[in-house]
Image 1 (spheres, rainbow, N blue to C red):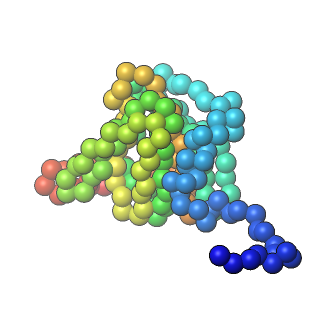
Image 2: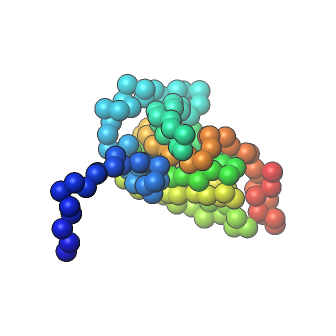
Image 3: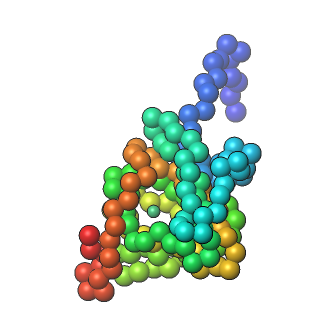
Length: 152
Ligand SMILES: [Fe+2]
């Protein structure tokens, strides 16, 4: 243990320095900050920008049963997403495809070169919070080739 001098300055917490999962979890549990933005779009997965700084963007997404984000990467960004409610399925694609079933409170992270698909295979709507670091929410589409893996 050590003593903190009385004249120590406490710097405000910079959320861009926190692990993106920690940021996503924080936003996921603070519904008052985004509940007014939440919509369910029967035509496509709904997304809304919740917060933006020089270092990161926070997005809210809703997924009706069957809605999907097709196979894609996020260019040079890194980040994380957390399921707020419902169930989401993430398919991570390299030469093989690995399926992750995610329920409320579970998170996944990504970085450059990470190719995945996310979809709602459940019977209820799902909500998720996504943190994008060092860039925007731009997505590059891929298709899956069983021999070569993800192909642009
Ligand atoms: Fe993604």
